[in-house]
View 1 (tube, rainbow, N blue to C red):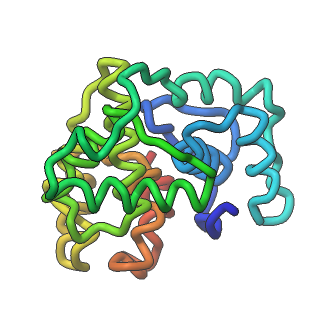
View 2: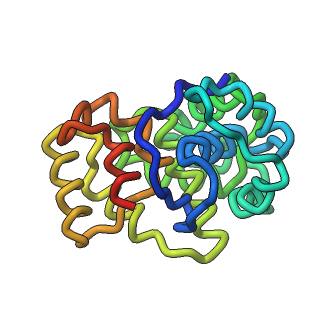
View 3: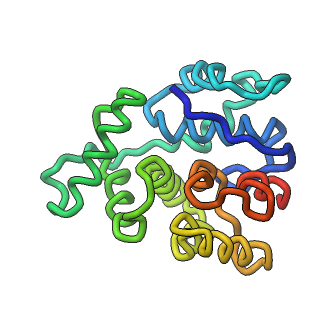
Length: 214
């Protein structure tokens, strides 16, 4: 089942590839989250899950046809092969199998690919204190960006600033974004982290600030 919705004020919102979408920002964030968390699910299956999300009243869902291009940009084919424990160092296996089990519980995934496991491994030390779902979404997005040859500066700086670790780091990251020194990472990778550290940063949630700044 989908997680609780990201609440906030409406406004322009760039997707994980930096594009402006013509539908509700809350719907966009939830759609991207569902695609990431259900990586083997078709567009129709994702749309069925999207219909179950408890959006605010009067939230209008776009028709599946409208979401198709967005889905195709996120659902990048992965031909890297199926990962197994024999393919990784012993230190990396616990993180990968834990993530695999969580994906199985949520969406029935029974395997990970080499590239999915590779990005979990690459991010293991830098995100050791990040909860499992935000870490998975970050690894998932890194794989998508890599496959499409897209830049990752926003993700690299997000990991470097580590705003999930404390209110001080969250404030420092927000200030860097506000000054233009740092491109803001997509809401997908931090929207559900705000309850851990962000709280009421400047009187608004982190997701609200992101939409107001776009």
